Length: 125
Image (cartoon, rainbow, N blue to C red; front, side, top):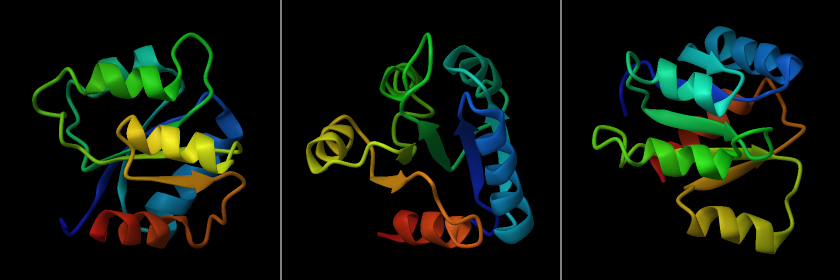
């Protein structure tokens, strides 16, 4: 694992983005690039090679799963670990996300004080 983890965080909710940014940069000392949509994420990822994707599942226009499929078409990103964040945590939904390429799922609402540690532990697995 690199010294400073680089995270591409995508969520359409501005409050979630703000809390996540504080949790990851301030508490977790991670480098974070954020996007409010799948299209914005696809544009930003061209100049930022993240160590992990942190994607909201339910977003308008392009879901987190659709975004991950698009990100995977880039050979430089096809092995980048993906963690989904969602309030929908029924076991069949979680297993579906993992079948579609996620390494884990973080439940919303999340604890901002432990989010960075949680991501680091997931990546270590």
